[in-house]
Length: 252
Image 1 (cartoon, rainbow, N blue to C red):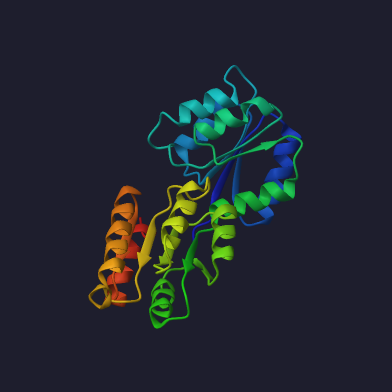
Image 2: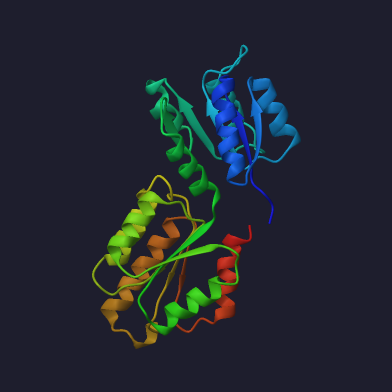
């Protein structure tokens, strides 16, 4: 498996050395840059999976200017950026511009390491009951070398969606009024998962439902269409079909 590479762009040599040591002990490859030019040289010549960025870089170009430049380059656009700075007033600006998160100095290095791991560690969230269909979904996703969080309660679902990042969220459709709608709204309202692909699966054939339930499903399908990366699967799908659908997101 390819090691993830992290770029630390920070003018503080001592802090960079500390972060580099901790990250390398976790198995990551790490490059350090003190100036925006050095950071761009790394970005242009090597793959980078995440950038740890401080606003106070050495040289004429600061971290905010570097971040704006990264957001204008297609090749850097999807690289997650974790900002660390004592400039509290910049927090909202960075987050609005797409920074993963903002750590205010001084911060807990352990918390920063945990955040980095959470961003880089690919995981799938599966929510469903103990039905045969849910077991089939979990088994199908097991072919991918990705951690599965299989949850059975709404409380755990809500907590995990808010606190963890996922590459894919798979949700069983529930018949109770608006339950699935609320769950999808939680996903899209989460700062960590607002753009994550979602697959909703049904454990009952639509042909077996009454008119009221069919209307609910059609409404949910429409909601999925409006959410962007969201697919809906009726009961009767095969494992092969599910693997093909999930692979569209997991193998990209």
